Image (cartoon, rainbow, N blue to C red; front, top):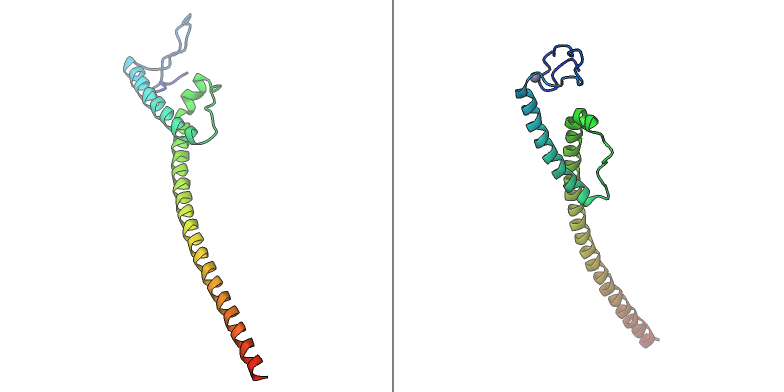
Length: 136
Ligand SMILES: [Zn+2]
């Protein structure tokens, strides 16, 4: 690592014998990053609960710490987008269900109207047949 993960400031080269590459330029950056990650973790847990609670999904626990560290902002953005799309799809489903109910009611009304008309046709046909019999 040659730059601070948080602010991007260049870091001095690793000291000889140092066992680990520095990631932050200062304690302030380390703390700021820690706070940011905690907030992101909370939000992603919330989003996972929301999305996975409704879908047969389980979070991929095999994602490593370092992978998560660099991808978290992008992943969080995708999760937000998916949650929003989920909301839109559910609203659309509710609308379509309401419309379906309305159309079924309409179909029911039309079917009973049709039954009335058919009964009327039968009645008139019988009447007509009776009149033509009387004439002959
Ligand atoms: Zn920094």
